[in-house]
Length: 146
Ligand SMILES: [Zn+2]
Image (cartoon, rainbow, N blue to C red; front, side, top):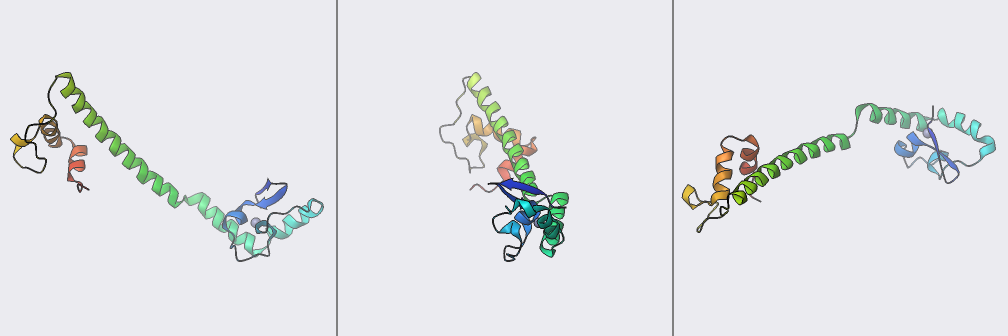
């Protein structure tokens, strides 16, 4: 069964429009639609038994049932989005605490690469402290610096 839709007063077969081999030009669906309305029933019956249409329907059905790469990409993007939201939430909380207490964020000779904790400012010191207990900050600080 073909899924027919209309655009610009022409009928198109959705599975063929999406998945039929563009090199096969003998199907009306790929050649700008079908607009001979007097013979459309015969045309649809002929089209539904064509090999091109059956192959396209098979691909269409697999695509519909099993999802797509976009779905996988969307899942990865959602995970990344959640991670960065959690990072921002933590950084914002530290920022709010420091500003509420009127504490400076930076030290006089702050070096982020230094292993000397006294060279870190208040902000980085708190982040380093939270890193020990928070897996999100551990993951953030273990990422490459670029
Ligand atoms: Zn078709």
